[in-house]
Image 1 (cartoon, rainbow, N blue to C red):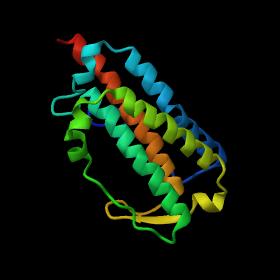
Image 2 (cartoon, rainbow, N blue to C red):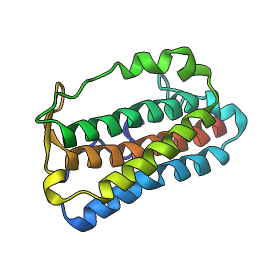
Image 3 (tube, rainbow, N blue to C red):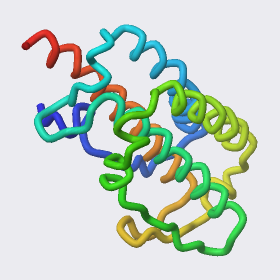
Length: 174
């Protein structure tokens, strides 16, 4: 298994159905609770343990999720309210190395995720098929839609929860 992608690399599903949308929205809605439960199961020293050699610590992953999903919410809102917006990128690796990403209490980012995901869930549950199809442009990803963003961030939830889950085996191997 490639520890960088414990749930596999993201691949967009081109056959979107209302049932699949509902499942992706449920994954997004569940992230704050799943993350809190996953963190509670880890020993205290796990927060500053990387999930793989050269990878981020659990603390950095938690703060990255808050940073990333704040951007997700903004990207979706821009796509819904502007004509073909160009989605801004950001330097994830550099953000993770800033003092708040390396040292802040993860409960701060858990609080951010709780609010952002509640708002994101309410928004996504209210959208029409036409709104899910609204386009945007990302400099690295190319042409994307709200459907694509929703799928990618649902995958992102699973991806980083799996990273945090790997830390238990890292600690056990020491």
